[in-house]
Image: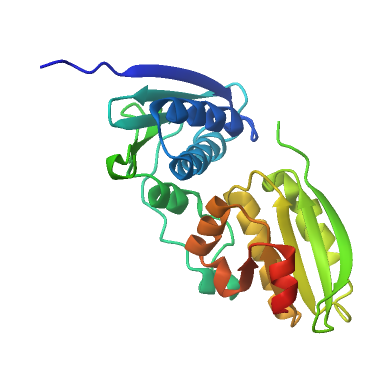
Length: 148
Length: 119
């Protein structure tokens, strides 16, 4: 059996809001090279941007001396993205955003990043670093063979 | 790194004769856009502005912090008895706005002409 090699691309971002767009553009470029449909590329861009924003804000606490690592691994049928920060990771997942509660002032208008990530990619998992840092979120988006 | 958000205000009248205040955004809508998004909205006279139409046709990037600013605007508009609609979102951000439930509180239209025809 022929083994399919994965191709890896790595980016390091400063922990400064706005730089998530560098990871977003890189992920989009890799996904386009792999043959993803345009709508799936857009899904990936938003998921990667939100993962990086979380890493910058909540993982690295906007400390510009820390960087966010983004590792894109392109396989035959899927693209895996790991976004790594120096935080302790998620202890509990936030509840699904409720627009009615937000409109009535019962829930913060913010806090939709993780919901968007989960909704837009095929797999999303948050892994806490064993040493209290180097936590990461792992995203997987699969090539849709039926639509090709 | 983020493209500065700009906001412009236009006054239009719908074919049905209703006054419409259009807030046109350009650039990214992110956490740094608070003054442009909420500031532009809050500068509108609440006594006379009853229908607000948001133009996203020149916005390429909206993140969750930007969506939160739009929600804050919708909360203030609801509390002031104003109706908010939007047009010009890409297919992707139309999907995202629908997923988070914004469409329940702000009707989305593909184009300005579609919006005006319905208002």
